[in-house]
Image 1: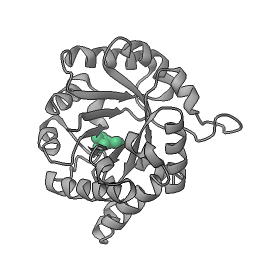
Image 2 (image 1 turned 180 degrees about the vertical axis):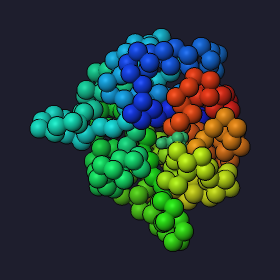
Image 3 (image 1 turned 120 degrees about the vertical axis):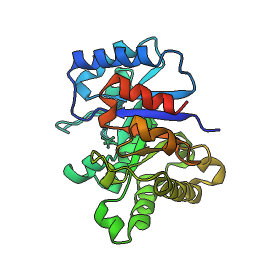
Length: 250
Ligand code: PEP
């Protein structure tokens, strides 16, 4: 039985003080919830205060990116050790906004994933097709390619990752994949993971759905057999809506 994992991707939102207040609100709302893993992923500048706000609770801390080198001349980048130093346990890698606006490729996703794993961070590796790709009949090939290349050569560490299926056409659009549409792709991702690392390992890997997941559609999506939680954007920015999604996963 895979434990559901709900992560909030705050993107470029919230100051440090706002982050601490939001985490305090989430903690209050989800008191007593133990059957779902909860991760918040604020901007880098919030991580120190966010770590203090998470301390002593089950809410875990994630970052939104990590560089593959340990240190050096990489202006604007953050290393895995820097994240570990701030009590970060998870990191989102290969989000479609990174792929679309910041030149992220399957090769750099793979390098970041390896660096995160080497440092003991749990990568949340995002895959998903654009509307153009779906309409052009390429959904399957895109998702399989991103999964295989992004997760290439991880060896036994493959078992430690989380995958997020995020159809790009559903992110921030209010247009959610239907539970059946999402399940079809999640099953495809799990088959692909089985090709890479074997069925036994694939069966243990959590695959989150992301793309306009809200309190009113979360339960139906997460009741699909291969949907093991959510990566939440907009609805993660308020304690009540994020908590309602978490409770839908209980
Ligand atoms: C995301 O960006 O990861 C996301 C799922 O956003 P939203 O929930 O706002 O669609």
